Image 1 (cartoon, helix red, strand yellow):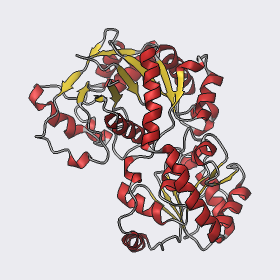
Image 2 (cartoon, rainbow, N blue to C red):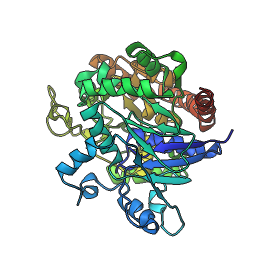
Image 3 (cartoon, rainbow, N blue to C red):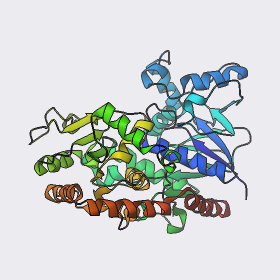
Image 4 (tube, rainbow, N blue to C red):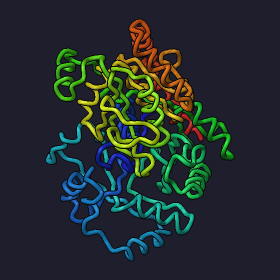
Length: 433
């Protein structure tokens, strides 16, 4: 059955990429491969003549927030917009042509069949919900049969079956580890569940959490897992070139460094990772790729102060890298280290396994579901256990070879073909409801 399915651009429009943006990008690729029509729903300002909307859309897409907010209405207007939308908000169609060059977005923006947008849609919806406890309803001409919101947002699309993906409930399970307003977050999840035609999640661990925390019929929540993002499905064209570029750029030898990548936030457990690494006195450097979290106590920046330990020149930190360079680093690492306190899925673990890199990760959350027996898993709360894992994987080439082989095989469970089959089951349930 061919369907028309909407996907929100809440995270796709942000610069730099997020885990949820990767999820949306992979979902859109899968839907196109399944033959479904895809409709992107965005919150960018495209007001004005119809023939200029495509230019305005791609002019503001993935701009830094400070740039996108120039010339916005005053705070008073924001307040009026937030309390006004008791009537449905109309979404403006954005014509798609070949006149605007979209090559710059090829790796970060899906090829939608249709686009609609409304200025500040997601900000308005969140403010409206915070003030009134009500969802915003949006409408559009010829709505898709299913609207798949890739993140909990207080919005419903009129005339569509509304599906919400809830990736995890980390702010509730680990309230100290996020900056979310916890009561607001819990209420939003409760209301998404109450209003949804179906809930999608990305692991059995997250599904169990949702059923444990909320009054949710098990038949209304489906685990589709995640799929390997498209960029991670192609092996290195020239491993020797990869190695030369990494060594020339960072001074790191092929298979001669540990790598962590992702947000440097409390749940990622980077502070314990660094303390464990320093305790091993390993000659293998540790590279951390990720922006420090906003909390001062979590700014675990190497070569600065890390609580309780003396930082080491062997620990390197880089805020951000282009995807192609990150891929080279993953392929060339001795191991990817990811001892997270909790993950709804744990995409970096899957990415590393698919690229043939050994993984040291965590026994918590969904990670054991993803890795099976294909990674070395440790108690993420135990610095000694993390250190022992680092020493084992650092000093045992046979173990590394075995983990790399197991990892590439395990990653096939999360192939695009398997993902499409799980999505087909989800949407069949939605259309049958």
